[in-house]
Image (cartoon, rainbow, N blue to C red):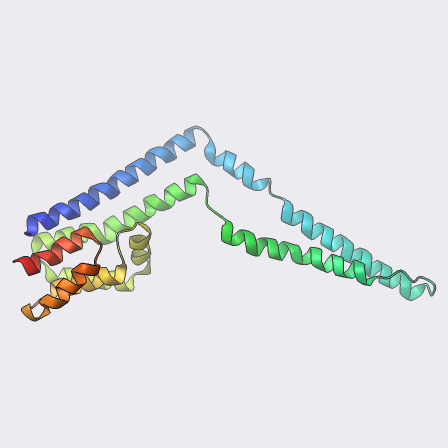
Length: 212
């Protein structure tokens, strides 16, 4: 598999990501036209559950404290206050529990998800595939090492690569290092890496070493 095949694989990935960006932009434009962002914001504002719980808890706690003060001043006032105190504490704790449970389940709006996908696709293109294409085209192995270092040291790029299902960043970086530093003694290591590597452009790149 020669350089042309490697470049073709990279170009396929670039076109796929560019198409995803274009699709996201078109969907976002459509959602803006139908007023979807304002509708979702309105729906989000309607969830007042936590405020009601806090208000009820504070109200009951204040009432319980008032009863404690009254009982201290009125000798014959023997109303049991422990149940009221426990109930008010439970109601005050409920908002915290509600926040903890809802935080893990919280999902973004369709617009936010589209914007996130668009952003991730742009990062993968700008920081990985376009520099990689240029480096492969020029056979610049020093640049390929720099791209590998970027995969290892830039959490923004690594996160984008993972979320866009391009592969496992550390394994991809290792594949790039192998290519840039290849010698015949590393053939077995290259073949073993190929068995675990899922990214097709990098598979094509490593395959060029052991097939030539």
